[in-house]
Image (cartoon, rainbow, N blue to C red):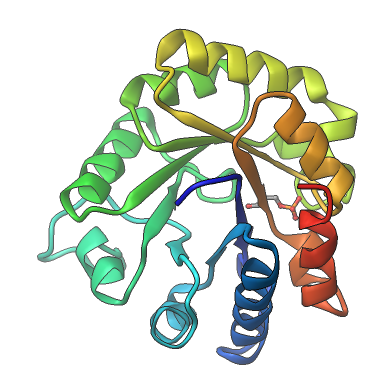
Length: 222
Ligand SMILES: O=C[C@H](O)COP(=O)(O)O
């Protein structure tokens, strides 16, 4: 994949399975084709297989556990999401936080299965620690802005700049995403201008009346 990456995290917003996820995946595919942007989706586990099978978009798990297949009730393995068609996985999202040891174990599992790893972080220090582990991406998201509609790009550009600097210092091979309240092309443009490689967002697309229109706006200034 080349160019900025936009990942739409569907979280647990849907009350059922299928309908919302397939609508957003279809919109992601359509807008990616029109614009040339890379748009991934992170559906619930219950929707992951169908999205990966029927929609030509990069699919991310929202979390994987750092275990190998075996007696682990209530866990989800990298092998399972890979077999269901996942391209990558989020790790340590603010709504699914892990210890440092667990982050490392989940990253090891992702590597074992060839999944692209996006480690989410909540401040500059954790961004630097995550970068030291060497995932493909870190995604810095100030937790207080998540789901608020107040964009990190406008409310806290400094945390993006400092995170990009920290990653470049620790491990320049790691790419940086940012997220929290991102909903417009302007937010994306500011984030990229501050040195990121893309954005991670949810409510701006998931709660939109017309997800395709919301995605078109996001890529409008690329
Ligand atoms: O994974 C996505 C982030 O937590 C951002 O969520 P949000 O776009 O609803 O603020």
